[in-house]
Each structure stands twice: as C-alpha cells, then as structure tokens.
Image (cartoon, rainbow, N blue to C red):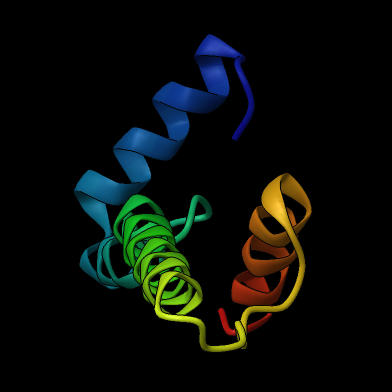
Length: 86
C-alpha cells in the first residue's frame, strides 16, 4: 500500500466495504514472525547455560567435559545452531 495518503484511504475503504477482502487481510500472517523469538532465545540460552553448569560440575569432580567449544565461540555456535531449528 505504501505511504501515499490516497492509496491508504482507498485500501481502508476497500477493507470496510468488502468483507471478503477484509477476511483475507485479517487472516494473513505477520511479516515480522510469530512474536516468540525472544522466548526461543531465552530457552536456548538457559539450555546452554545448564549444559555449561553441568560441564563445570563434572570437571570439578574430575570427569571429562562433553561440551563442545569454549567461551564466546560456544555461545555463538549454539546460537547459530538454534536458529536452524526455526
């Protein structure tokens, strides 16, 4: 529709006058996603931190760590891997 006042007015009137056009527009998905990205990021960060915490406990007990990567590299790798799931 753009930013033209005339086109916005025409589009609005079309939606008000045409119930079929309104139903199509109202049922369209958001171009910005589903609004749950932050929730997914927090879930993955918590899972990563839990893995790191278990790794530190295992290391303290003299057991070898099963965690891949170190420090920020592991955080970035985990983040990019998590994006592939969505």
